Structures are given as structure tokens and as C-alpha cells.
Figure 1 (cartoon, rainbow, N blue to C red):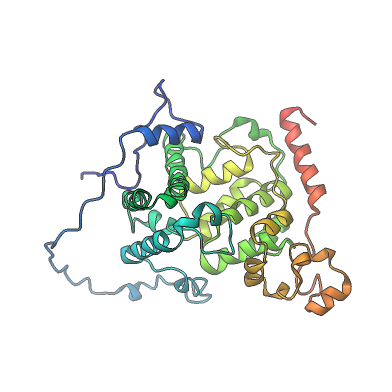
Figure 2 (cartoon, rainbow, N blue to C red):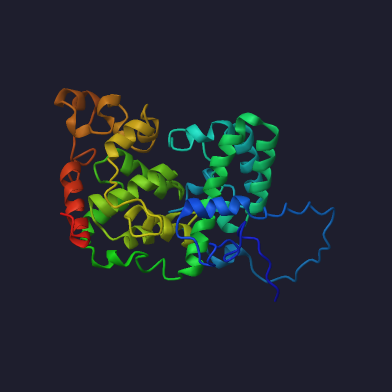
Length: 358
């Protein structure tokens, strides 16, 4: 058997520090990648391929009964995804034609179709990262206004490369804290909180919208992934491995390297991680990145009639506003399972136990 590189732009070990060590910080890693020998252009499509009809296997895929039936948890996925190479190339083309110009501004907006959504196709091998790189570079070269946006987009591919490099050199990344200090972190055994988070019933609309989008489509917008992961690991102090396992079970783009590196990044235990004391306020995040409430209203229709002012904090709405919107907290939508300021302080106190800063 012969193996050919094709999953990554830069194979693990091909971009190292001057000392020959793997990079543990993203920015210098990606800077080194950008000045390294660029990825080879994808090969042109062949005019013809010699094809020999395979022998009859005697059964069909339907005979294997691989598709879920009762319950059919994947029933809605076909509305959102077109598996295969043709679907991947169509999605790339549409993104580069319709969304790349505003990528730098729109990539954090879950209410807009501003990202490529190529992650499931890259994970499944439907499309090569070299094809994506080459197509994006062509757009940047022929359209000056898109150059900044293309750089931002390619940097997201860079995070994928960085995650694979980390997992290659640190193969326990999916099971152990990258930073050993976090081995002593006092995680909470909050099964009820975990279940509320998994089912989108935390009482925080942006968090719940993300988890409901995930269950319905197998996807969650990247900004919302960060917010939901922060909520689980910091507001609830549930171990990042619980969230990593849930994403692994539910994401169509579930990828070991990206998944474990991303969760450790948010939790603060990973390489080049966000500091643990950076705790996203889910209300402020919703107001900033879903300012008109389109995303929350789509995934949490029971709150759709609330005014924007209270959409991300329905517990602050006066009784007459809730009544007019047809919302009874605790019946139609849950009250918050934790209070933000108290949960934030509890997380900081827990972090202080392993840093000595309390």
C-alpha cells in the first residue's frame, strides 16, 4: 500500500520551529506556513478514467439498514447537506462567488450565511484543502477587495492544520489536558446541567439555539460553538471531555483533531488556549452577533414574539411583555439554570484553586 498526502496543506512535521520542535502557538505556526513552500496546485480533472464494473455484491446499502429509522434523528439533515464531491465543489463555488467579500465581517454572525460550511466535506474527503486553497487564492489574486477576506478564510484552514499538527505530536490531546495544571481543576459532576445543555434547555437563548441547531442539522456556527463550549466548561464547570464527546456524536464535521483542540482551547487547558478567565457572557454574545434576533427566533420559536430588548434575557421581561409574547417561563421556555455573574465568579474561584490566585 502506498500513502499519498491529501488531507492537509502541510503534513505534520513539515513546518517546525528553528529548534525542530512542533509549534504550540498558532500565530507563529501559521506565519511559518505562509512563508513555506506553498501547497501544490490540485491536479487537473482527467479527461477519462479507465473503469471496470465491480462484481455484484448481492445486496444494497438499504439491505444493510444503516440509516436511522425509529427515531430518525437524521431526518432533517438532507435539507442542509449535499454529501459528496459535487456538493462540496458547489458549496465552495457559491461561497467564493457570494460570500467571500464580506467574510471578515460576517463570519461571526450566525444569523447570516457568511461562512463556507465546508468543514463536513473536508472531514469526509469530499474536497481537498489544496482545492480550497487554490480556489481562494485565485479569488484574492483577481479581486483586490477580497484579499483581506481570503486571508481570514485561509487562517481558518490554518487552525485546522494547527489542530492536526498538535494531535500528531501530542496524541493524547483527545483524552488529557494539554496543560497539566488543569489535571487538578475542580470540575463539577453536574449531570442535570449537562442534560439541559445537550437538549438546548439552559434558559440562555443563544446557547439553546446553538444546541438545537446542532441536533436538527448536525452543524453549529463557529461563534456559537465557542459560546456553548464556554457555557458548559465555565458556567457549569462540566469537564470539556463531556462536551467534546457530545459534539463527536452529533456533528457532521466531527473531526478528532479539530474537536479536541477546539474544546481544550475554549476550556483554557489547550495549546495557545483562550485564558480560562475569558468567560463569554451569553446574553452579550447574542446581542452582539445576532443583533436582530433572527438566529435565536429561528431555533427557539417559542420566544419569537419577544421584543429584541428581552430576546436574549427573557427572565428580565415584565409580566405583560411575556404575556403578550405568549411566553410562560418554566413552561414554554426554561428559566436560566445558573445566574451569569454567580457562575462566572464560581468559575474564577475554581480557576484560582489551581493557580493560587483567589
